[in-house]
Amino acid sequence: MRTIFILLIIILTIFSCKDSENRTLSKTENPKDSILYKSSDKNYNVIYRSNSRLYLINLKNDTLINVHEEGVAPNSIKLEDFDDDGNNDLRYGFSSNYYYEKVWLYSKKEKSFRVIDSIENPEFAYSKKIENTNLYYSFSPNGCGKNNWISYLFTIKNFKIKPKGFLEYRQCVDDEKGMYFFKILNGKKVLVEKVNLKEADEKDLNQNWKKFMNKIASP
Image (cartoon, rainbow, N blue to C red):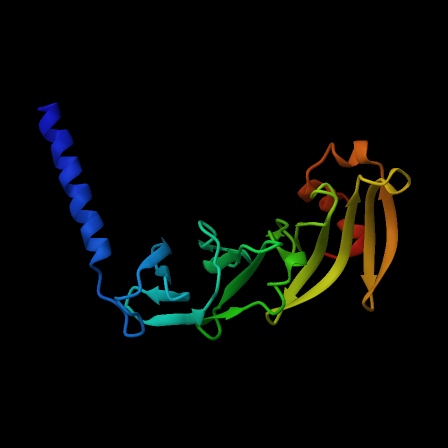
């Protein structure tokens, strides 16, 4: 009986996979271009094909995004609620000398997706939202075998990034070692505080920004 049950599960799994592979293509997809990566949630399918085109398709088989994206990184395509508004957004990265990303936010007003301006700058890679605030922070290696790194604190308004603060972590030059927090005023960085590395390493990046964000930007 147990053997029969296992066989039934295997058969159902095979048919389920075939159904997924044989779904009706949207009008903009070319069946000759093989699928390299894909991701799905309950509302959307994201497909990256061998012709370097990335598609976001809804359950009605409408193509919402159709863009040429050279070099999308494996396993980087995600449907997630980036801005914590209750709707999934599209996020994916690129492999190069520095990792960088694109994020398409879902607009409730427009009922469509729009990419965040300048988010593809490597300085804004790996961005995350600080809970219960309108602030985000990034993480980007900055030389010295990736032992030095930087982070921006910023807001997003009308799909545009507005930098509020800057963090620089240095551990390669003895007389400059430390974690430096800056406030950004009129495009210029103003030093707020320097923290020694021992104290800095006791907290993760999220915790360090939470400690200093009120000195730099209002949530």
